[in-house]
Amino acid sequence: MSVIEIEHLTKKLKGKLILSDINLSLDAGSAYGFYGANGSGKSMLFRAIAGLICPTQGSIVVFGKKIGEDGAFPDSIGLMIESAGFWPYYTGFENLKVLASIKNLISDEEIRQSIARVGLDPDDKRVYGKYSLGMKQRLGIAQSVMEKPKLILLDEPTNALDEDGIKMARTIVQEEVQRGACVLIASHNREDLKLLCSRFFKMSDGKLTETTGEIKL
Image (cartoon, rainbow, N blue to C red; front, side):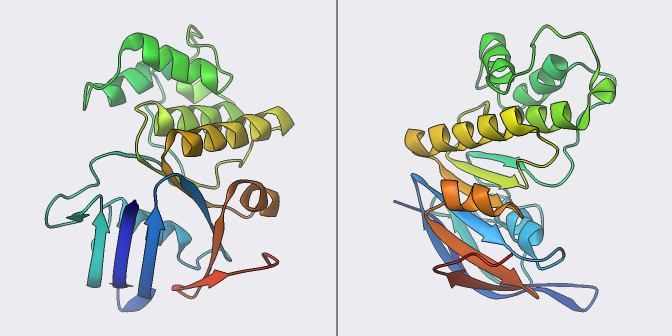
């Protein structure tokens, strides 16, 4: 089942071409890898799919709805793009509870399970501002999957994670794919992409190219 259909997506910011004539079709139940140099357009592509920026030209259809027309955002999406916007004076649980209250899809117990799933303690009274970088990354992963979304966008999901954290993140991606989610991963970690993804796309100067064979980062 096709989850994402992108046709001739182009985005300009302040006269600069950020995304250039991108065409893409992605299905449910698979993970897709995106790689390229910093500033190549990976994060901007994810932002466009999530409805956070509007195309200059072209269209993005997610779950059969055109983003920006039929709905500003995809109906069922979890995302972790660059730094997460958590409240520094709330605990991890309090942060996720506030976010979960927007849609009211999950219970407090399900929030707690999501926190435990990434190796954090849901009863930890430390506020987010006191978290280490690795703990912040884990909480970001937890919020991206806690509502069991059909589409998950992960930008550098294993950044700042130790060996156990990387293993945890990879396991969660595999479990979400098995659940039937469409997972998009942007990463500089070649092993993440090779282990998790069925198709690979290189971003360069805003252009997207599907690649086969060796991933050259």
